Each structure stands twice: as C-alpha cells, then as structure tokens.
Amino acid sequence: MNMEKNQEMLSLNHQILAQLRLRSSNTPIRHNQSITILNNSSENFPEWYAAIESAQHYVLIEMYIFADNDFGKQMRDLLIRKQQQGVQIVLVYDWFGCIVPVLKRFFKPLQKAGAMLVAYNPIGFASGVGLLSRNHRKSFVIDGHTAFVSGLCISSAWQGNAHKNVAEWRDIGVKIQGDAVRDVMAAFADTLSSQNQKLPESIVLPAFSGDEVSGSLRAGVVATTPSDNNMMRLDLNAIALANQRLWITDAYFMPTRLYTQALINAAHAGVDVRILVPKTSDIRWIARVSRTRYRELLQAGVRVFEWNGTMIHAKAAIADGVWARVGSTNLNFSSWHFNRELDVIIEDQNTVAQLCHHFLKDLDNATEIVLNDIEAAAVRESRQARFRQLKAMNRQQAKAVARQMLELSQAFKGNWHSGSNIVDSREANAYLSLGLTLLGFAVLLAFAPYLLVVPIIVLLGVGGISTLIYALRQKRKIKSKQKDKSS
Image (tube, rainbow, N blue to C red; front, side, top):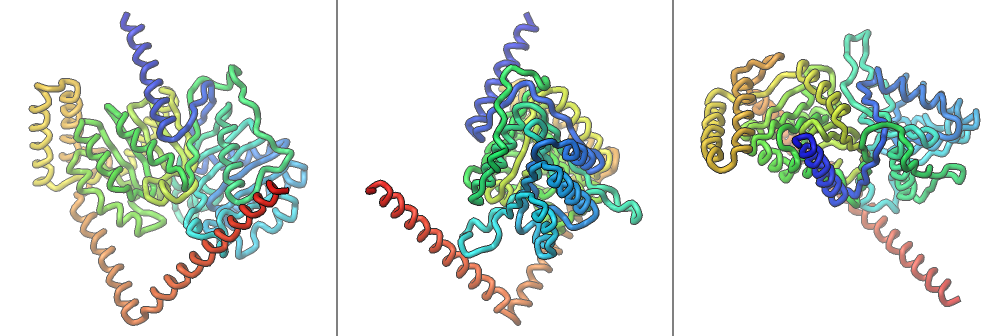
C-alpha cells in the first residue's frame, strides 16, 4: 500500500514539475535520455575532442569564448582537418567574447577550409540596443546523436597551469544522447536565425526517436534568449519547489532582489539553502559585489561557501536530490535578461545524486562564511521562536526549521571541514574596494569628464542610428509585401 502511495506521489511530483517547467520556460521533458556528468577540463575537453574526431557528417558549435591559446589552436586545427575530410563545421562564436581572436584573424584558416562561421551580434549600425545581448552558450552537436552543454569555453584557461602550480578551474558539463540532442540543435538553429543565417541544407533536425530507448532518465533543454527570460522563471520555480534542500553553485553571483528574497523565504521555511561561489574570480569586481549580498542571506539561514581553489566557474543547482540544472546561466541580470544561455534540466535521482556528491566534495575545498557571535545568537533565537510558532500550526514545516537549526548550529560553531570566516571582514573589504573604485572614477571624471560624456554620446548615436536603420528596413519589407499582394 505504501509502495503504491509513493508511486502516486512520485507521479504527482512529475506532473507538477512538468507543468511548472512548461509554464515557466516552455521546455518539454524528454524521456529515456542518456546523460553523463563531466567534471572540469580534464573530463570535458577529451570528450569534446574524441566526439569531434569521430564525426562523420557535421559538427555544430555555439561558443562564447574560443581562445587563441594552446587548447584553442588544438581545437581549431581539429575542426580544419574534419572540414577538409568532408565534415561540415558550423561555428557560432560571440563577437565580444572572441574579440581578440577576431582581431588576430584566428578563425581565417578555418573559414578558408570551408567551415561556416557566424559572429553573434558584431558591432554595427543595424544592431540597435540588441548589441547588449551576448551569446553566452557553450554547446556542441555531433551528427545529431550527441551533444555537450556546459559552462566551459574553448580555452586553456580552464586547464590551469601545472608549471606555475595553478589548478584547473572547477566546472561542470554534460554529455547528452537521446531526443534532447534535437532540442540543442533547435536552439542552435534559432541562434543562426537571429543573425539572419540558417543551417546548411545538408543538415536537418533528426526525427524524434519516440519509444526508442537511449537511456533511462528524464531531461530537458532550456534555451534562454533576450526575448523570453526562460531560465530566470525556472530558477525561481526551483526555489519554490524545494522542500528540503537547495544547493547552488554559481560563478558570478549577483542575483536580483526578486531572486534573493526567494532564497530568504525558502530558508525561513526550513529549506537547507547552500550557495558555493568563488573566493577569487577572474572578474574581481563581481566577487566584491557578491560579498555585499552575504549578510542578509546569512541572517535568513542561508549558508554561503567560498571555493578555495583557483576559480569555480560552474553554474548548477540541485533541489531535493531529484531535480538539477547544469549549463551556462549565471545568477545575475545579464544571464537572465540579455544573453543567450543554454542549460540542461535533469530529473533523475541517480544522476542528481552524482551532482550532490560532487557538491559536497566541493565544500571540502571551501570556506564557510558565517555571522559574528552576536548576530549568530540573534539568528538562533529567531529560528527557535519560529520553531515554537510553527510547532502548533504546521508540524512538517516545524521539523524543517528544526533540521535547519541543527545545521546552522554546526556552522555557527565553525565546525565545518575547511574552517570558517566571519562575514564582517569579507563585507568590509568588499565595500572598501568598491568605494575606492567609485571614488577613483569620480576623481578621474572630474578632471576628464569627456571620458564619460564621449562614450555616452557615441552609444546614444549608434543606438539611435541603428534603430532608425532597423525601422526603415521594416518599412521597406512592408512595402515589398504590399507590392507582392497587389501584383
């Protein structure tokens, strides 16, 4: 009887997940998928290389950074060789993310070999405000049967530097086989369409396999564009759905007020919310801004950890051990509202268990940020008062708050494996750095105001002209259609 009840509850949970996913992101879930979790460059890069090496028909790549360094050159040379063997290479690279290789004409040999290269949103007078949108995706599709989605770019930076004792970056990717590969291809085709391009005629979207079994789990692809904000809504729903645990890894943590408050509400409800972010970042000012967000999260019961390694670049979330997402979306305004992003949603206990294992292992190499003794005591008292209130009203939620109190008691004592740091110094240093930076800009602009005025004039001018050009093109299309109808 209990087994039947559990099956009914599981079925109901799948229905709720499916409805929320479709309403928030219009993402269909694919059954019978095969997903392989790949950690860091040491697992992702060899898999990419081997898959491309085995390609027989085509390779599609969407990449934010394709660097002119050792690994970048290795991949470019492989793509040139495959193109010369008759395998159609189609590469969409972000113009801004690849600005240095573009200026150095890094892609010319690949283009000369016959590959189709498309720069996403290059600067121009017809770009308009859309120029702010960047293609932050990192994906590969090989012959329509295998896809890779991750947070890793084609760059040696992810490999670290053994000679200088610099460890590889921490990052996560997935290898997909099954119908979800078609969704990655469809997202790629949509990006081409946004740049007035399309897939070569020889490349067609594969038919869905239907009942053909490629694997056992459920997965879906979330393709975010500036016009839909799909991942933002799904991220908010993940917080709402979490009953016990919400574990998050994010490289550039600058959440909106809406998302921050959702995390706070979840923690108040007794959800074990943990956030893992970099201690040292390749974009330092983002790490400083992130630290100004810690205190209010800690006061609500959220636990914050800083990675002790070179750089943690992963973007992942796990809810209750049954749902996870891995991909390119960071928890910040740009990723949610401006960029093209690509993430994979996983609904499979075994695969999510692997991600949980890796998350806990990552915490072994992290330092927990905690409140000072006075604030910690205030939070404990607040938790206890809430527990007493809920005990008479909602036993399940009271148990969740009690469980969270036990977790927090260990954190406040500083008993975490890698020790802890008080938030005060982290926050003070962050504000000091940001304050000095703002003051420096103020002094610079006081003596050279044109440094601010000229870029604004140029930006407004380019935006105005490009918007006018776009409007004139639209009018021309309308007139052309009217002529066709009249004839």
